[in-house]
Image (tube, rainbow, N blue to C red):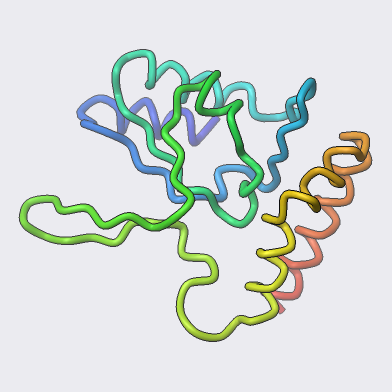
Length: 148
């Protein structure tokens, strides 16, 4: 609810809205199932898009499996790579930032595995209840490791 209130406020004078990834803790698009818990946010983003406010989403490491549902149904413009933009004469590199720069080879490897079409096809064969529980476990484990 707080992010929806923030988007309401920001949209009052926004020319466009940029979301830099990890919009969800986990997102995977099955053909016939949508993960629970995001109805208000998806509705708010669709409302902004319907009002003519361009909403851009850079894919993050938690929502890298967004494909066509969110652009087609919600109206967001997806970006998978950083993009250079200029505002008021200043250049900005806009993106999620995961895996950029040197190092973090373990993460870069797992990112390649997660983005592999065969791995995505295999994951899609799992029942959503099991797959989401597995993703939540993995995310919690990763978060705990990174904040210890």
